[in-house]
Length: 354
Image (cartoon, rainbow, N blue to C red; front, top):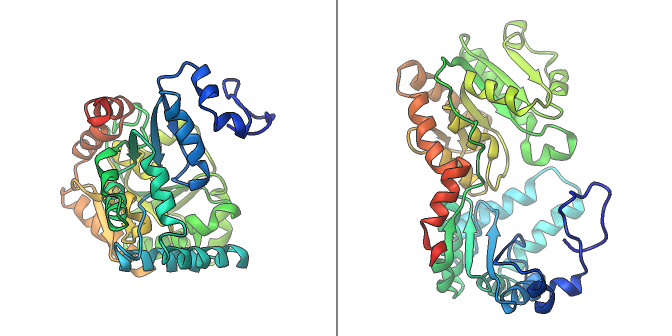
């Protein structure tokens, strides 16, 4: 990492100057075989990418995103993403930044082609899900860089191997895991979450729900006007240990993602590995999360509206009650794609080795 050492730096974190990061000689001195670079294709880091490859080190650029869209590739998706980011509750300066970015996207030579040149300066490009791969391949091809598609490898964020369904019985319960503090409101949308939970629990009296995560317990204060018979079936929980979280995944049948955007929704990935199904709204900013509803593992609501998400939850509740959702099947299917050892094996079996 560039810059001076910080008090909370891990012991094995190496800090150095921006000049060193752009020096092939410095990189060569480290004796490395491979570097994984998180730069999201930002052209300002191209000297770093070129220095790494100039040192004879294999370079992997990781694109941790639900996808990249361009008005020259998939205009409707680009418009939906641009409107979605600009419409989020946020300071005016950030909203103007999103609008400026959307305008910049319409002139590819200004930024987008430079970003693709940066991404192309790699031996391998890793993306987190198949939908992200499709989006990035379409983006690159539309702007004249089809060779990038040959370098892409799907490498999901690995889920700990402890995340399994455990073979026990599940309850009629909806779980939602996230960060619920004020700084994350624009992304996680707790207002939408509570509105959906209230309607779903009212329509499904045999079901309960739990919200887990930092700031989760404070959300109870937003439900003081709820009917007691609904509020009594809601649990609000602060952040918990990994072991406690595992128990909550195993006990729940459905995991809800109410977010406005996610690159790779780790909570949903953990949930399917524990045999829960997933409900999420249909939006290109949530395309990677929607992947977790495949393999008979969930339902995509037609949009992120309260009514649509509530209806999708009710559909999942019926599918569980009809025996058309199987926790062991969901768990086994997704462990093969998401557990850490399988992610590593799948990478090694891919073009990564070539």
